[in-house]
Amino acid sequence: MHGISQSVRSALRSIMGRFYYFASLHRLARRGQCVILAYHRVLPCDSSPGMFLQPGLYVTDRAFEQHILFLRKHYSIIPIGDLIHGWKTHSLDSHKRYCALTFDDGWSDTYSNAFPIFLRHNVPATVFLPTTYIGTNRRFWTDTFAWLLANVPMNAVRSHLANSVTHVLDGRRPLDSKFFTGDVPRARYEVFVWFKSVVAALMDLPTSAANEVIDEILRRVGQYPPRTRTFLTWDEVRTMSQHGISFGSHTCNHAVLTHLAPDEVQSELVDSHRFLSSQCINYLPVFCYPSGITNQIVRGIAENGPYEAAFSTEPGAEGLVCSDRFRIRRIQVHEDVAQTKTDLAFHLARLSGRART
Image 1: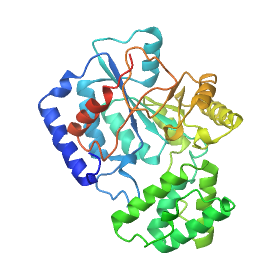
Image 2: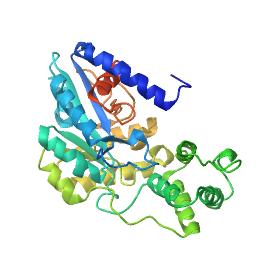
Image 3: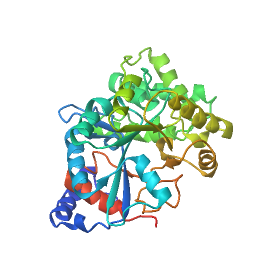
Image 4: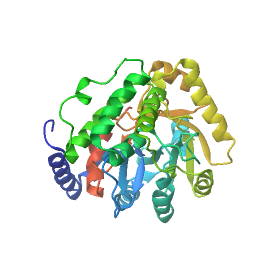
């Protein structure tokens, strides 16, 4: 589908999803398979997600409830802890299709919008927490950048971005000149494409440097986002812990670990584990790589640390035995691929075939 517009791709996926579902092809999904789904945010279907919130970061509450109803009917939804135990003891049932739900980042809407659905349908899930963000008004730099574009003129943001990158990195500009030259993007779609391209480029920097760039832009424009909370509080985490929701580590600072020195990686993993262990919550010693980015060094530190397993964003399913518990595959689920249960069925069929045995 390369070269086809996003709207056409979405329509084609929807058509294929309906065909796949109503032909009952999803019932042929092989048994003895474990699919771990990765969500981020659940937003009310009657609210606007905002121009710069990428569809790959959320589903609506209506879509999420459809997902749960579909999964309860066709899969055995299992807690992550039970799944890992089943892998270790070889006790999973080859006649069942297993599914586990995970949520990255600990957004506040996990409590306000997803948690009521968990309760209503009595399903378990695991939420991966970046510990220094929980219970605070801190924001990811990507969210602050989105706020800037929504509240500051585009030409000013672009100009300040160029100056801030130069200032923070001592003249070493990691962004292509196309981000700063030529006509200023004005159409909604063009601005969104520019936003995604800049985010992708800044992701190649250490997270601390990307934070510095965005902070420098804020200083230059003299405007700051409201200090509203976007992440869970510890009280919300404790409440969810009492109702079948478990929690794992997503590091302390949600830093891209491959940009850090080995001792910094060690600190991110060990310190977050220690803190979570002390919080009187339903904590599992499992870990999720921020942004799914890892390498052999990071993976080795995770494996030799206090964790039983680590989750990636490598697409695919697992089998009754997990051959690599420190690179567990997950299928990402979000609005632009799974707005309905038929979309979800087709999405799982496309990606879960990449199962390890």
